[in-house]
Length: 144
Image 1 (cartoon, rainbow, N blue to C red):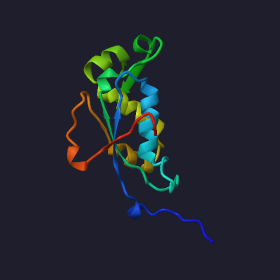
Image 2 (image 1 turned 90 degrees about the vertical axis):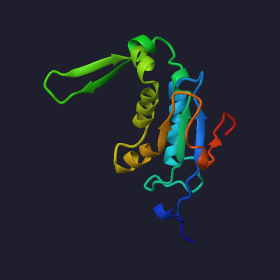
Image 3 (image 1 turned 60 degrees about the horizontal axis):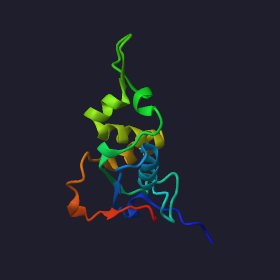
Image 4 (image 1 turned 30 degrees about the horizontal axis):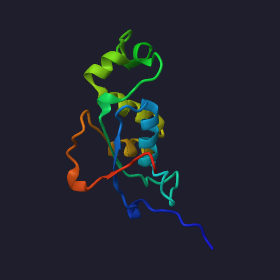
């Protein structure tokens, strides 16, 4: 008897919605990263891209615990000498709350070509409305 290995072409991808309102950033990011990798499937293999599509709604209502809102920074380097730009998370939450979620999920994925393919399937939305209703996404809740 041989072990079944999933092939990239035979993977069925579903669409899931995660509601991030009044939940900690890390908890929601872990759920999204696990869905993107496909770790919830019985046919998971770490070397095959077998994950699903994820829509994270209400990114503007996520919670950062402790003093992270004022003490945590987002860093970006422009490529020029001495041009390291830093932004506090409270300013980032006011301007681009969907980017905060995207960056948290991206940090939890693999740092290779597989992780770069998986992050493409993540959609972050500021409000409760999204434009992917045609794909019939399922709600990923607390009970799963």
